[in-house]
Length: 163
Image (cartoon, rainbow, N blue to C red):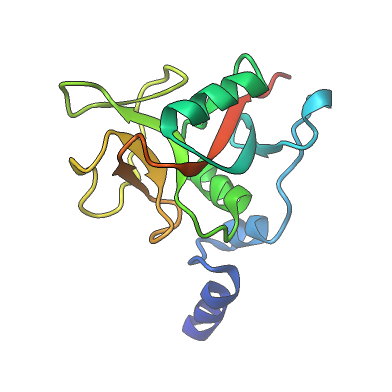
């Protein structure tokens, strides 16, 4: 079993979770059900898209708003969304902005869509005082770390999919 997991890590670029998760990681994410956003994918409850142009955190958030009035940098509230976000970003070896940011003069974080910070998936030792904006780490795929907001990163925009 260890050999199979090692082979999967080498092939997929990240450790596998359960058999169900592994199966999901071998398939394409569902397309966004909204007609004009078929190029976007379902990630958790969101229609989401990974943009490869490099932008500072605030510029990335503005770019998301330009894509859709309800779009923001993606908020991550659970492990399932994290897993699907890893599938969306694939093996793209860059740090990627997600929508978390530190509230000024506090140690608290919030998401750009205004939702509460209710899920922690930090790289060990994070959050640090190295920055106030949250990115998905390429050193530890799927985990969060902080960075200076002015640094340029790829980014993931998302908006809640409507039924």
